[in-house]
Length: 428
Picture 1 (cartoon, rainbow, N blue to C red):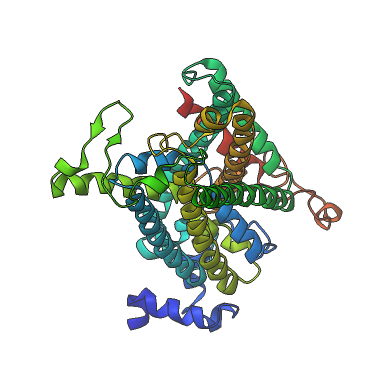
Picture 2 (tube, rainbow, N blue to C red; picture 1 turned 30 degrees about the horizontal axis):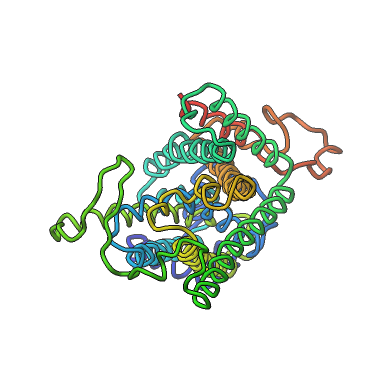
């Protein structure tokens, strides 16, 4: 009776032998196994073909996206100093790491596809798993993909010196086209998606390494010759933790010396929220835990290496920005600021790298969004055709000979089509 009443006892029993059969996992009967894994659903769709490297790359690809370019401005205008901004990034990263570690524990304790869907279903029941599935598939992921595609197109526009085009139909159509291209890339196969994702991860590391190396080079050059006109210069002349007036997006100025502690807390809370947005995506590795060959070992390894790596990248990139740029233009950490400082050619190069970084995040989010829809379809929370892999349309009857053949693709094409179609609603 105690085991039936307290799920944690059953979970700890399962964790001790993650590869054991149902009878050895501490579950009382077949109904227990169904309650955790399938709940009367269709069962698993994907094979366990991924490893820790792929899970690591998925987290890095998703997290290092538009947030690294959009969040610094929001943080900078809500903190009294650059040093405080870096501390906010660090705190946001640590909070993301704690959440990711919790997800790693759940991912190794509760089997099943769909990330939070089986967790909530097991702990609170079908209703909560159902609501989580619909919320993520209809609202959260489509909005994320829409934002990323808009940032992608805006990076191209800004490199060309064009601004204020966000409401134009051409801008929206380009965003839709970007989503369609990403959907096609993810529809080839899981192997093709992960290989392309690894390429995008490499471009992210190269981009951040280039920013950091440039910052270090400028710092050394200015330390060697204080009169050298290079970089922003404020980093060597002003205190990193001293109060300085901040210029807000609406043109108003925040005088930090005159703020009360309560108002200061409000600004810092807004900055922390922006940092958490920058780290959003830390939970996405759990959505491929059912495809990991050894999830009990690989999932914690992937999360506990990817999140510290991302924190280091964000801190390095932001510290370099405060060295490279005047502190009053740090809020424009995109190709526009680089164009102003280094000329159009460098602005175009920066736009290309920004687009590659955002494209990688788009690919990773679309990859995960398809898995979410498949898991919900397997639970019969969405139409069953969304669980079909390798082809468009409903599952067809196959002969015995055909059933022996390996499928040409293991990509959930129907689910991917849904994931890149629904965001179109958010462009209106």
